[in-house]
Image (cartoon, rainbow, N blue to C red; front, side, top):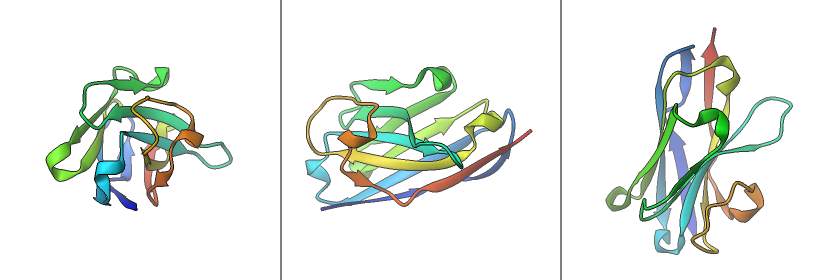
Amino acid sequence: QVQLVESGGGPVQAGGSLRLSCAASGRTFSIYTMAWFRQAPGKEREFVAAIRRSGSSTYYRDSVKGRFTISNDVAKNTVYLEMNSLKPEDTAVYYCAGNSRGYFLSQSRFEYDTWGQGTQVTVSS
């Protein structure tokens, strides 16, 4: 079993930056890809970015391309989401997710079988 713990969220003004971290523990060798999702109040959870554990490939939703960067530190079993030029519409609870089924990068939340508890990001205008 794998446990995921997010950190790094908080309040920030529009145009600012935050870096989220997701620390994995347990059977981390079983995880092939990692992703970040987010969920705003009253909305469905949506895909943000994904990365293979090797870091060889990444995938982003269009609205964050050029602003967000996903990366991982295999030695630390930690995945990061660097968020720049933040906008009020980026406000949401951000969740880290792991996929133990294969090396594919998916934007579907149903392909991920391990989730963290989430960290709140609030961007004020």
